[in-house]
Image (cartoon, rainbow, N blue to C red; front, side, top):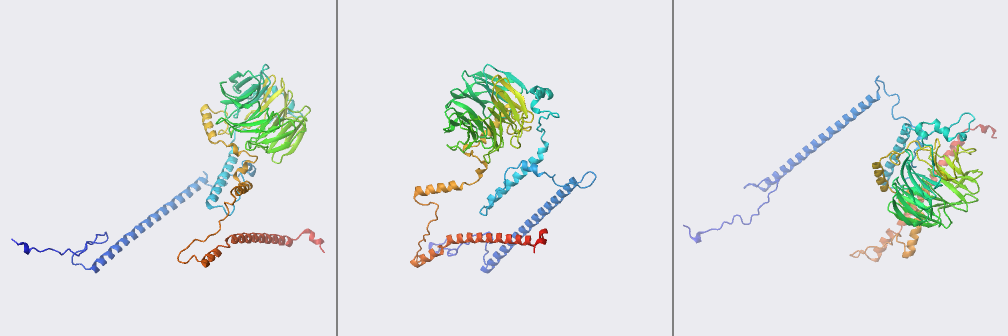
Length: 610
């Protein structure tokens, strides 16, 4: 047994550091030198490098295989195209590529002009502009191609030799056409509550009648089905359909009322009093009203709020019309002027002196190019709204009390109990009417039915539906106004139309100005802001050198740094002037080249030179 004094302490591990294990190092065996350990590490590194190279080679081989596959697919597609191009007989297509389109047909569907791209436009914006232009061109060409597939064509009334079309009666036309079209000519004898104001829905399917003595009726006039009929027990000045055939507005003696197709009163809007005429802007969901108190008011029917109330200060407003192209309202006044209004301004956009007497009626075509007015001076005038200048002027022996323009540009004018229809009033000088018809009472309202060759006439003895060949657009847009839509389709369309509603702030004379920058207004706002603040917030701040340590902010170094940036603004100005000079010089050189080319050419008059 060992004694305590004989015990010894094992200190062999003291002073030796434990080497951490690494994935590229093998555990050290006793007796190995440091050189051998380093060689092992180098061999491991080389092995890893070889593995990485092998992986890269495998990736490259995969990429090459993919490229070969893509090439094979492209070859197969080309072979397939060539097979398709070949006919059954084995010959190639004699007319390869898409069918050519006439430029006139393409110009008919032109949407916009190409935007001019400045040099400061970024790459992202340039790509967006180019993509939008490409899609617009493609849609334009597709519309021109599909124009051939439209099922209907607009027709006109043509008489025999030496026969005037205005002498053909409505009964003769109804007997000559098919049964369906003949049924569209009818008379409603409503002598008790007349005269009547008339309005057709946007789809042209439903008819709204408003009698002066309080009678209001909604009719599906094609099937002759009465939807509702009420008597409001007070005088009615005007009636107007709203965004769909489910609601309509009635301007009664005192206030403005809203009804549904069951005759139930939905709203009584007392802010709109003494309303005489109404116009509904379908894409803005705005109901514009003109009152006897000289007020022009706008009501947003989607939220039920008044958007604008403008005092025109021109007296009683009983002549009103809208421009379907830009939603600007036209008002006629007793002093012979026509004013154009927008809900964004308290003053008139344009004032035109059209007649020597009071204005009786106004009509604007669907393109927003031409305006037709009639006045107390017994004249009918056609104006070009783009230049605000008269194109034609016609004298009517008894004047015209009501005007209406169809989708195809036919003009209807009512004189007493006679309704006359004119054709091509702005392109040529008209000497005689296209059609004429006498009704049983004094005409109080005229309206062409959309997508139908029908003219609705409201008069003192009721209502008359006239046949006017060539008045309506033969092909309708099913996504915008579909006469055959169901109740579910109408609901879906209403939701989409509300989502796409245009704000009233965007109503202006020229709708194409929305994509441009109003630089004058921006400069004026900037000047107002400078006057309010007392300094220019957009001005470039004066350069102040940053303070640096270790003697680098001495007076000399600060001045040197100021001098380095002193002429940066001048450099930009000098660069712009040099570029302008180069452009001018290049233009001068081109002119000189053209002059030299022209001078070098021989002329037949050279023989007279001495």
